Amino acid sequence: MKNLKKLLCLVLALAMIFALAACGSSADTEEEETTSEAETETEAAETEDAAEAEEEEEAEAVVYKVGICNYVDDASLNQIVENIQTQLETLGEEYGVTFEISYDNCNADATVLEQIIANFIADEVDLMVGVATPVAMAMQAATEDNQIPVVFAAVSDPVSAGVVDSLEEPGSNITGTSDYLDTAAIMNLIFAANPDADKIGLLYDVGQDSSTTAIAEAKAYLDELGIEYVERTGTTVDEVMLAAEALVADGVDAVFTPSDNTVMTAELSIYETLAEAGIPHYTGADSFALNGAFVGYGVDYANLGVETANMIADILVNGSDPATTAVMTFDNGTATVNTEICEVLGFDYDEIVEAFSPLCTQVVSITTAESFDDLEG
Image (cartoon, rainbow, N blue to C red; front, side, top):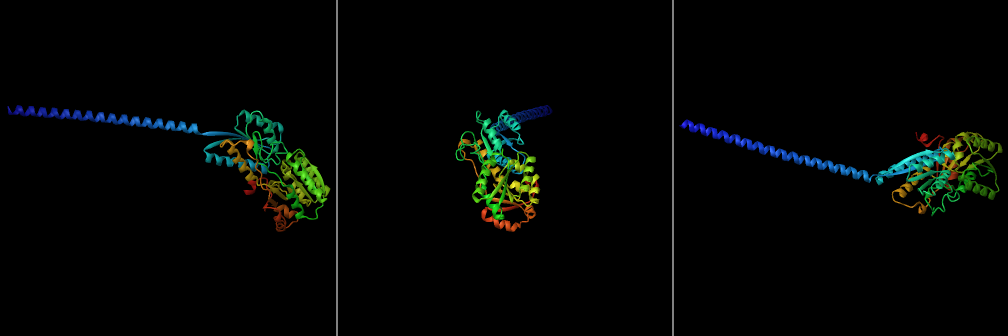
């Protein structure tokens, strides 16, 4: 009987153990299932939040389409374009926007220029940038109806060219930066280097609006002093080369060229002709001196490019109105002297600096190269 009782107790004990084990297993399973469900819900919530954040970020990302057209491939104008692009990239990071740039060069071809502008309009750019007077004028005409904002760069006389109503109040949809040239300042340099000069050559392209006012001012300056001058013009590189040779034959003591894009493009082809004849070439931009002219006098084109980009961003991001955004002009106080040509002409560079310094903000030196990048390299 005792054995039977012991057996029954053992069976009951085992039954209780199995029951407790089953309960524990069930509880553990339920706990694991609950934890798994919570983790899944958390992961789903995190994924949903990440997706919403990404959608919000994409919605907030602003892209401005900017179409830039350059007139010709030369050192000064290329320097402007490079600095516009670099500064817009910097400003894009600062404002948290993207400036999507389309760039082209019409190479002084009016038909190509019209097609480039038509492409910009078809691409629905938010703003156009015209580098040099002919491009600015073409963009102005093409946007009269659609009123796409236009910012120009390196337009020497925007009022006389009819691009703006005034420098202070441009009017309509266009404004920009001007490389206005102080012609009298360059003429003063000619006579500071050679007080006895009595015959000056004027070399320019009659079709360049940037030359019209400057050449008229140069003539008035020389007429007042009773100094003889000879005009030679060209509309292509070959014609400019012939004009330079003619000035040598004319026996001029110096040659003046304003910020004329045609002559600027031809400078590498004519500088040796003038220098070897002992004729200093005084010009309206530092890129002329880079390409072999004796002196380039005028604005800092790198800075002009930066300020043009600042104006673009102000219009697109801050909503400034081109019609009331004043055209920006710059101090024309820097004389850039090509030291290699200075030596060929028989001038002492230190003496030239001494003669020029009272007439300039600063005098800087340069050597002949095809582009500023080549020089820096």
